[in-house]
Image (cartoon, rainbow, N blue to C red; front, top):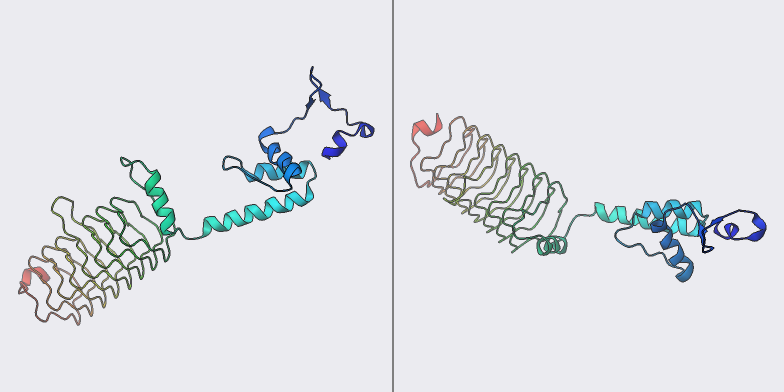
Length: 273
């Protein structure tokens, strides 16, 4: 079509301005990549150009081969968007985000990502997918993981003081030697978290709110639960061997087959009524 528009025999009757320039009522921004394609034989799209707009121009001007290339390029880009984010993506976001802004990854996919030994303080991961994500030894001070999917994630030795994990899926996660206590922050919330089979051995859970959380089969061996709230929690089959339970609230909790061997504080009946 572009050739016919400038063919004297086609009688296309293009309008011209005072300088003899042809007037074409199309988007110049989306037409420019077509000109580059005619010059170089390659399609190059800058970040500020919508490929869908270029595709419409290619179809209008009859660039059949180019139309196919743009459609393939768009399909590839869509697939990349669906791929889980990586450590490099997180580092790039941290570097480009001003220090006075809260970094938000709400609802994104980090499945299997290696985020170990990173400074992720106050980052918002709520509603995100972190299945199998490696967060070992990372600083998660005040981070938000509300309603995130963290099944099988590894948080061993992470600094988790003040984190919020309300309604978070943590089944089969490993949280060995985590520190959830910090007097300067509001108590950590694991309210209603799904934590079946989680390894919390030697972790500091002092003051943590785990009310109505599901901790079936989890290990809290040698952990500090001083002042923690486990009211209504499902602790069936949990290992509390050597745990510190001073002022721990276990009212209404399911304590079926719980191992209380060698606990450092004797349970008072008012704590478990």
